[in-house]
Length: 397
Image (cartoon, helix red, strand yellow):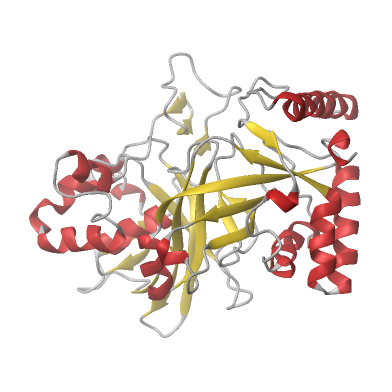
């Protein structure tokens, strides 16, 4: 994008958001993309704002500034120029160097304007599974995670063929043009077997399925080493929640069919397992991710390690990567004592099931304890976006 084009886009976004400040009405971005219904608010009107750990939130935000590769609000509905991002990151650095919670809180309050999302919010939780696995197929380890096939591409306006299904987000580029990939059912039947895409093997197809849902995993290999796998692409078919399928069939309620409840259903119905899995046509491919720091979380959509309790997966049609989002929910599993979850998080990931203006997925860590917690979170939430004053200069007056 040229500098002039960037300025025009930012001017249009600023004009839109100034209109939102004045009227709190629904709008659209310069590209025509729908934006959330935003209502200007004040930090002192955000329940739980003053009691948050702002240093932890700043540490999560700083990841977007600490790398030489530009990452902060480079795409999506809210975008900063490199110069604007540089200015914001310099201010963040001063707060990081200061090291106090007061400086961190002051950074957010002086460089951002809060906008409440008036649409009803909803949050779930996700985690990084830790499971045993093998690099080679054995009698115990027979279920593979697959590498991305050759030619896998995301479908865009530039490469989309005529009559290509609107719901199919990925395909395979061939000498004859872009072609659909097989869906989950076909892959389960061996459609990709001749391509030798097996990356690593698990003992349980249900474990493999949940890794598909989470998008990453830490694997304890039979040779004693540890391997991390991360998202490498997908077949592009829409995601279908198999728990929702069971609810619609009358085989349980949403409260019963949490992750633990769904696992219990699979255990009780082994002969029906594959038929249910086939209901979700979406299929995920994986790659091995080097583990530079064992304490780091898995890599999110922003290309940065996720931070437990501070990383938020969002719908990138409505929220840009790097944007701070204050999340408030009375979700019982997330309460600390009697204190409800009120926390500033950073949008740094996405997922096929995360759709909507106020839809969020909270990254809650790695391992069984995090998995149990993540499986219990399905609750209403309030969300407030913190928009940089570079995009809404009048908001700071």
